[in-house]
Image (cartoon, rainbow, N blue to C red):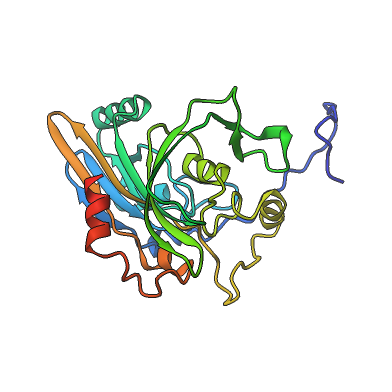
Length: 280
């Protein structure tokens, strides 16, 4: 029988620990990850949606770090920041200890310029700043890892810019500029102002749905039988290191647009939008 958290174990009490069946040990060799930029210290990858960076209870081998170890061996590059599993886009990895230290300090001091694009529910026009402290929901809700507005939470600031609006579907394409780096920050901020990201299983569908999905990950979310990702993509990271400026840009993949019918072929990601994202 399952043990209750409050149960006090005795030294002679046998306990069995169960975990999810590990994924395919050969998974790293089957992964395709695009290298956006590489030199002797910096590695910039295009992390696809649906791929986690570090091992989890469900993903032991199908991870970015497993792919890095397979490709680079003992001195594999270390990821310098996080991207949620369903978020695609630029991931910076360090090929040297000096660069890893530099980037972690730069991220902590908000010295790295980041921009994302997202497709959200509702109309967001012009610019908007959300300066709302965030904290883990914890025991206040069904899903503990969810970030919620909390006056006692950590300072969290995101700027948003509306790029396109489809009135027929009531969906907007927005650029997102996080000035702090809290967990789920963009997703939580957009949800808090009534514009959840399309396909967001936690902030768009709610606690009950996410809890059910976590217990049964085989559940499909789309009518066509394919798993849905949320429409959030890290399209740009810019930073300085030892007098050299790096500006890494990554166009969104096709599956970003397939989340919705906002653009069947992605053609509305046209020159003016690209220029806006590239110059913000």
